[in-house]
Amino acid sequence: NGQVTVTLTSTTAGSATVTATAAGQNLTAPAVTFTAEVFTTSITVDKTTAKADSSEMATYTVTVTNTANQPVSGKSITWSTNLGTLYEPSTTTDANGQAQVKLYSNTAGPATVTANVVDQ
Image 1 (cartoon, one colour):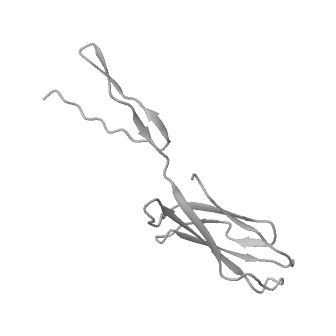
Image 2 (cartoon, helix red, strand yellow; image 1 turned 135 degrees about the horizontal axis):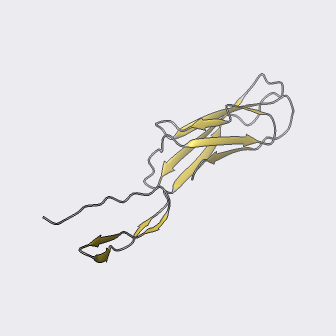
């Protein structure tokens, strides 16, 4: 029937143009713009104080959702802190869009825990 179908996909945001040559003529399709997926993240902690003797841990939970407020699974999360030790500082979001890390410390003081969604 003289028709060709091409599927264009991208993992990078930006504009793409497809050009085909048929019967010696260059044919250019309209540009397609790929946009980056936008996520919303939130972080919670189960307690705001813990003993500074490594006997207690605070559990931090990050939740990743998309623009439709649906959970996003399979996102890599890297965790960091300015005080104490994180148990498993790299985690992955589950089917509920959540990932957790535990913090413990032998040093008293306020700790700041940061979750970074990789490739966001």
